[in-house]
Image (tube, rainbow, N blue to C red; front, side, top):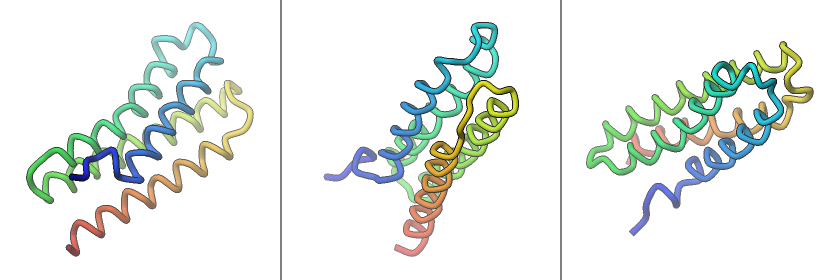
Length: 116
């Protein structure tokens, strides 16, 4: 029986969480309760919503949670760009690529669920 752990979107979301945590370690200490906390919370929300949606019994609910995950992903993207503007991180290319790839994976999963 397959679970959320078998989904590529969930796996890539978990990788993104790891990247966000590593990246945000270097943020200034005065951001611990600000941007650091916010970007980490939003990142954790992505695989969490994928998992919760996959655990629901209906496809409509799953799709709803995937859209919530996309909202959190947009939050993370915005917060990464803010961190770049504030010079907390130098290069956002790897993170931006990961966000774009994950966005495509989640939209692909939504399309798949809608057409099955």
